[in-house]
Length: 358
Image (cartoon, rainbow, N blue to C red):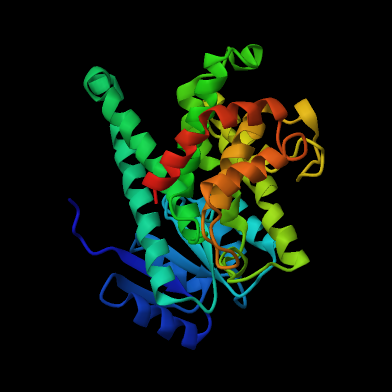
């Protein structure tokens, strides 16, 4: 196991932010602080860090301009960059992600949050480098290592999903539970030959795997909203709703760089459609009835059930019986009536999953 202390470059024009950030990381990483993007580029000519923490608002060369230069050069394009920003505009945050940043952290940041984000991203980077190494030698080891590569890809995907879940840290095992609920519902679909024309060509293994990314768009929603201990304002809820669109954009961006389309298409459908409602009152597109993709309609039941039986800062957890009653009452309004009927057949499986995965 690699025990080498990682090196992090912290770039910010504010000396106070440099001091606070350096103190937070001291003892965990080798930290080099720099006060401008220009100085960063010069230092990178002789030393490469494992990760860069980059302020957006800086004179002369801002964070966006700096990351464009980093990503344009082969020798620095691979370095993961996390933006540090005081901005709360999601469109600006999305711009940073589109330019190649892997995450952003709102200032002022807490030490535990900063350390956890860095830890997760360095883990993803290490797994990615291992995967690259395997792929370079794939011709020689294809038979012996195929299973290992698949497991590694799954680990990267799981880590990405857990990063999103950590940002929305009230949800606990939400991603794993919704995967299990989905598995139960889709097995019931197959058993009863319901919607068989739609599901006949699905690769179920990829469907279950891609479901982990249904909330990936939350990466673009600021922490103060995701972790707010109380009810959201109208404006905040509008931001939360935008995670469906952000998720679709992120997945579409990935699709541009790979030939693997089936998995990502399933993930895109989950991301954009799991908050649509049968009566057309959902978001983001107000689809109704069978206009809503079947994957989105199935995920809607899994997602809502888990939200109901989970505790939130602004509500206590409903009991399983109460959650079943709420979903039943919303048959034909929020949910596909046929799928609710299936849910009622397998609701005991939902109870067991909820009780065993926390």
